[in-house]
Image 1 (tube, rainbow, N blue to C red):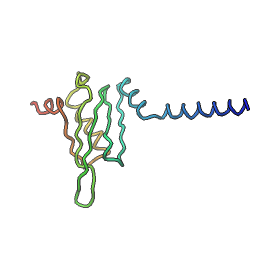
Image 2 (image 1 turned 90 degrees about the vertical axis):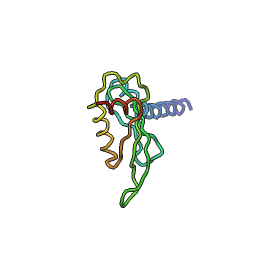
Image 3 (image 1 turned 30 degrees about the vertical axis):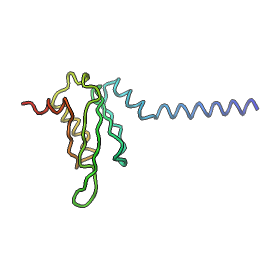
Image 4 (image 1 turned 120 degrees about the horizontal axis):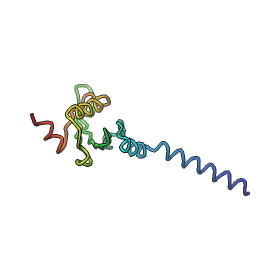
Length: 124
């Protein structure tokens, strides 16, 4: 009986460990801390927002479904930073690179930036 209980405890720990290691939210937070680029997105579910980290800044994007000539697809993504204060040091090229990262998954989508990025990109 004790061996069975020990075996069940070990199995439960292994299952918990795998769930922790492969948790996408944990990977997202780790990418923010390490200032890496990471995209958390469910391309099959338009209702779930897109989360993207770039140089330690977390961006959130809302996807909008529209129709093209022969199919329905994501036609617009509204993107904004979760914390505007973390944008310090980013340049125009960084925002264009973020747009290109998103276009890899959604080539037909128009990317609309939210405040304050929108105002920054309209200057000059």
